Amino acid sequence: MDKPAAAAALTPVASNERIQSLDVVRGFALIGILVMNVEFFNRATASIGSGMQQGLSGANLWVSYFVQYFVTGKFWTIFSLLFGMGFAVMLTRAERAERSFLVPYMRRIAALAVFGTLHHIFLFAGDILVSYAVGASALLIVLYGRAKWILLALVLCIGAGFIPGMNWLFGMAGGLAFFGVAAWWLRGDQRLKRFGQPPVIGFILMLFGAIALVAGAVCWAVPDAPREARFAMPALGFALTVLGYFTKRYHADKPGRPWRLGVGIYCFMFFMMTAAGASQYFFPQQQQPTVTQEAIKKEKEEEAERAKARMEREQRIKEETAALSKGAYREVVALRAGRFAEHAQGEVGFAAILIGMFLIGTWFVRAGIMERAQAHLPLFRKLALFGIPLGVGMGLIGSTIAMHPIPGSRGADGWQFASGLQMLGNLPASIGYVSLVVLMLYSASPLNRVKVLAPFGRMALTNYLTQSLAASTFFFGYGFGNWGVSRVDQMLFVVVLAALQIVFSHLWLSRFRYGPMEWLWRAVTYWTIPPMRIKQQAPVAAAATAA
Image 1: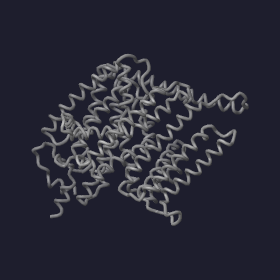
Image 2 (image 1 turned 180 degrees about the vertical axis):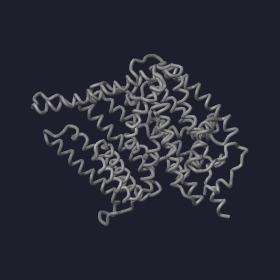
Image 3 (image 1 turned 30 degrees about the vertical axis):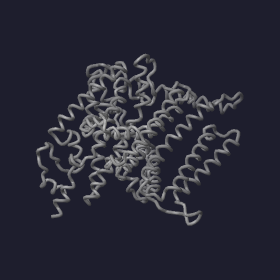
Image 4 (image 1 turned 90 degrees about the vertical axis):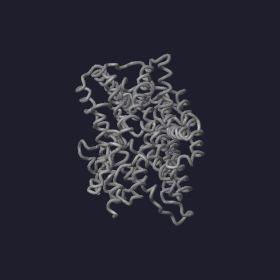
């Protein structure tokens, strides 16, 4: 009698078991992703991260400004939170059913990586699914990785990195080291017997922070010390000391560790970026009146490298623009396929940021906040009230400093500082947006009609890929050739496509249990054939075989 019960637990989430707030937020995030992505169906993806497009005026300028500071960066963070929440939902259901979780989830990650690879090559180079697959793999290391295996993998990556053409493995080793430290912080309980028994990881963070502060002071005392070290070392020391202090104070709260680690990772990454940008902006490097021949040579070499990097980037933008605006489909596919390997190599670094967001999302579900959202409305009110003004406000402050980089400025234009402020603000803003949607859903006013987004969100993967299919067909040269339309017209496209997808999602889910891609993803995850039509009953025999 136990076998059928265990087999039933292997099936995907039923409609009546879904958390409605997650589906609504997911639908809201899909619209934001489309608003953000549509620009890069009319602009080379190689220019992502370079701020607002120059030369805009009137309504196009205001649309671009709104998207840049109220949308960009806010919605991939929301989707990252949602990804962590989905992970926690699947883990919680597996624990309740007392069944295996890791094997199905690893199949889920592998399928997502395949979807993302195909999406990147055949539809849109701005894909984020591969990033989520890599980030999810890193999350498994943080949550379940054993120290000996992490160390072994680290050693193998370092050793193999010396092989010609394999130096990218050094980056992989750095990522593994970071994930290992995060795993220790999250799961380690070692304490020092002296100094009041602080957690070892907190003591180490404060120790390294103190060393960095001392090193920074020495750099300022030495006349010929590198300028970068004078600013980077104190910033690093301050960040590590603060992290160590909060670790010492709050590490005993095990249930709260995921969100604290997530916030710490995210803020550490972008604090360092902001601090570096601030140092370049407020203390630009001054030209020395008297320098040695060696210094002159070094300066020329560095300037040549910077010029070469700018030229390579401009060439990439030029090639991509020509292919997407006028090229044949096979040319575009060849271009994206050729650049995919380079794109994939940078995913480990991005995964370090993603696991922070995943952990925060995981905590929201594991703490019961999303599952019982109506009981936590006071918390959501606080998060929306403080998160949105703080998060959006930091980006707006940055916009007064710089809205795009100036080539050759070496950071003195303030762009890195402004970008760092915006990225730091994206975390509270995204949590504030999620909280606002939840408040709307459970309000007694007409705002609760936001629930219309639930079916749209239930078909998130299908709709995300369909957005790329529709946009690439409409804008690219191999389709209808509307490349480069105004920002206002881009928003009109967003409104029409989102409305059509919302209607289609309602119609589709009135007859079927899942969207087409959701059905395929669940089939691979659970290694069984989920029933597609609503009237169809679950095949017990097939589920038992899968068990």
